[in-house]
Amino acid sequence: MEEEPRDFAVLGMGGLFFRARDPEALSAWYREMLGVGVGCSAEGAGPSGEWHWGTAAGPMVFAPFPHASDYFAADRAFMMNFRVRGLAALVGRLRAVGIDVIEKDDWNDPAVGRFARIHDPEGNPIELWEPA
Image (cartoon, rainbow, N blue to C red; front, side):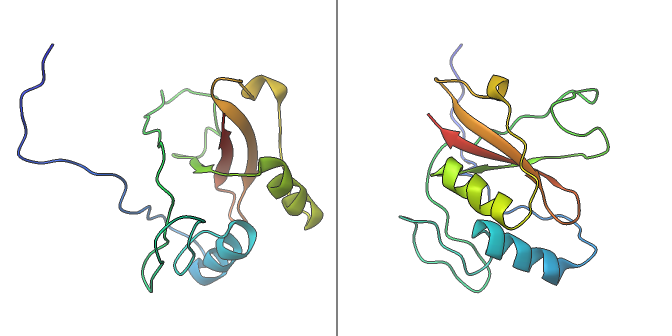
């Protein structure tokens, strides 16, 4: 089936906005633990700025899950997934500062990559993905 031409295009994610009990503390945690957030810039990305995080280009999954899914906690409407390089080193760093990291062999797939999961200080689920 051929798609009709469009006079518009969605080019990618422009942001992720979510509620936090302590936005400043949570922003600091993301910057310190994962290098994510305003003023951060991923290796190979353009410059960051006062209002944005410079990210590296690459694949992004956008997938609504069934309401009854057990892929992440039922009391959460979303799970963030960060594409990473050096997952083993990042997991070691997170564990060294006392962050609980969950790894399961059945999450990993040689064709897709390796995965680990953590939660931020407010309980939001985060999946760390190192593509194959």
